[in-house]
Image (cartoon, rainbow, N blue to C red; front, side):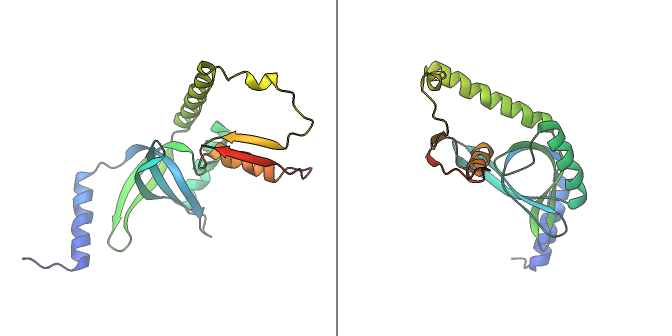
Length: 183
């Protein structure tokens, strides 16, 4: 049996990936986590889910010089910033380093895909509510001057849910709200 050093094994893995993978791939994934370091590099966890179960996940990076351009451009087209819970189509380069392992480097993001996904999801929800006969039910209820009990139907990891909760908790008049969350 041949014995290899860990560096030799990792070098073979790197060479194998380099020889067999394309230069880059367009990949659909949801941003699961997102953080930044002091230099402005963006570190993400990309996930693929089916029925809220994670099928795949991987670390990804957008280097600071790329992130500055991508984030501003993306926000100007979609009206929202890159954030956890957002489904994106990104151009990814697969990297393997002998010390740091496998990582994905995001080079570009297709904002039109994100816009299409949002519109498609919204239409699905509206059609489902209409089929169930509940789309117009809220219009029949009297609305108090300041509603303080709110039922929220959303995935706890969705960007919309997190934004809504943020707005409730940080409202200017300082109103308090009782929320019930349904997934």
